[in-house]
Length: 171
Image (tube, rainbow, N blue to C red; front, side, top):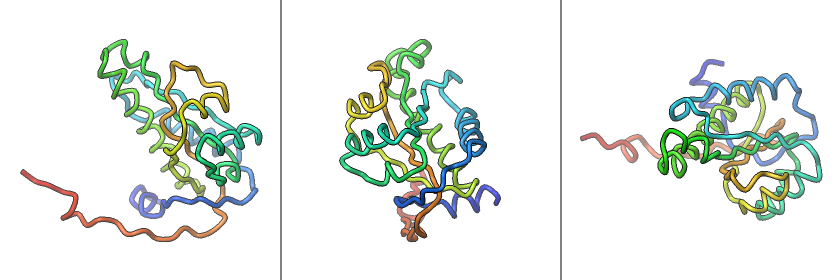
């Protein structure tokens, strides 16, 4: 698929089959995330790969009982690393750029997963401290997004999008 087909084909999926995601696909997704642009090329983020069942169950609890997290083959957790961005950009790097860096990397990973025939869904509803405790993330890092990955358990429904006239403002 070309890029535009990938973007069109990608949908949020919250049901996964038990088939494990191949290590080669995970590696490719992480390589793509590593290529994401970042403020000052500082890559102010860290990525955790969660495969162990007990850790995924702990993530379910931290994410207000979103059970599909445990069904996924693995969960990628994207964390902002504020101190890494603060080196060059002080408070703005700490408060904003590191979060932007983590979200861009997560978006790249999500699109790479779609290109490889995998399903995912962006998860932002969770308790930060619960996620930290679930897998031992340092207090210096800020969990920003979780991306469960796997093979789709059902066909995602098509969701409507706002028209360009509603979201584009020219001056």
